[in-house]
Length: 236
Image (tube, rainbow, N blue to C red; front, side):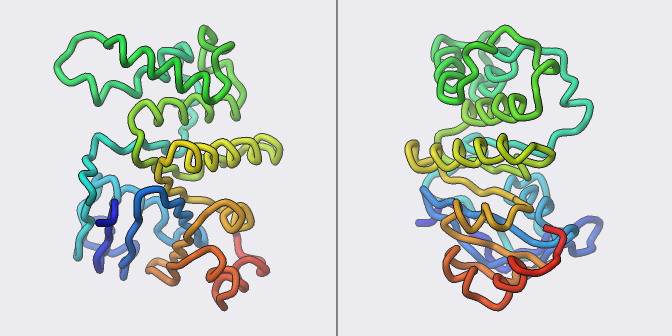
């Protein structure tokens, strides 16, 4: 059974649809990239997949034993979040809050997982640094490590490379691909970088306030909508 399914889903606000005709599925180990012009409903879809937003029609179904607590989420950062006055280790460890239940303190396993993910993302030397003193790329690595502390199954990433320079962007994309390949973590990522989406993702979902395409990256590159979007002047 697929890990996640959208069936004729419509999402929006106050009864008004923002994105509709969503009918796709994601299997364990997939890497799905969601693309489309600004305002096409990408971030709204992510909120719907997280079940932070109830569908106006249709459904989102979790399969293969997936639970809401099995999902790691890396949202777009706000200026206030970038200035958060906490240590790196503390931020990463906070990814275990959802698994702590009624326990008042973090367990040994929680702390070991935080350290493991910091090592995986090259953050060990920054453990005692203040989060707000880090570069944008370092902050995104910290937030990715935090998201990994929440899950070994599914990561939802909303434009994780926004505002980063090309070198740091490439490094972060490579890390995400490595997490997908080596750990088998399923990835659903919103991106404006269509060329990197084609390079790294297995499947592409293109939105135009509705589902305009869903299929493999190779099929997308060869399709009319894909070739126009890749070669056009769209704000991607």
